Length: 271
Ligand SMILES: [Fe+2]
Ligand SMILES: [Fe+2]
Image 1 (cartoon, helix red, strand yellow):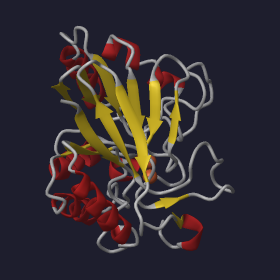
Image 2 (tube, helix red, strand yellow):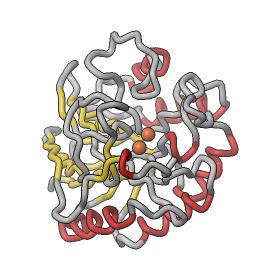
Image 3 (tube, protein in one colour):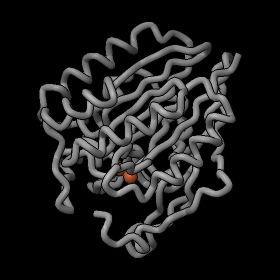
Image 4 (cartoon, protein in one colour):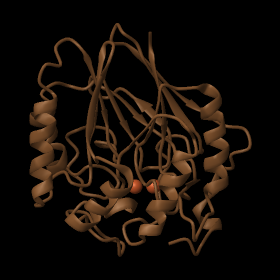
């Protein structure tokens, strides 16, 4: 039997500023009707959980209301950005913010097997940091990777690895930095068949380097071209990943009728 994952991302939920709750509920209803085996949120679950615990709590309650099996990964808006790239007034990740995230959403890294596949989720914001939790994550994931055998690897994390190639030298808060990317090979030990991320608020599917990279869209909003180039599709929705026992997969974006592609320019006081 194939294993079906509904990937949602960048839900940016908040009780005080519930601008994106309507889209979340509509997309959630479509996912409930599709009956996936698992829902994974690839981060920026909350609008500003890095500074407001109430946004984390609101995000958790809305997810629990789906009544489906859930796994979460943190985004920069949930616990701060990577130390190397924290900017725009955004706080860097620290131990307290990470602990608060874990209190609301459970482990910020995980690993599970389904027929033909091993799925590994990591905390992208910890990569390359000087926090003790970063070293702990690397050790834990390396240990979890033992015994993967002939399974295909699906890697889940908040930020895409790069734009076009792993050799890019640019340091930005949009993609993993070169230093962060350099942590992955030793941690994983094998090349992922599938790399699943969020963060950009655009859907993109590409095969640049032997892995299939899928950027999940936001359920909430897109950014205008004056802030962010167009890399893929600036639309809201979710992605259905089908992992087959023979190690192959399909990933497709699902657009949900009634979910509106909101533009952050139309909501000027959000951040
Ligand atoms: Fe986001
Ligand atoms: Fe993000």
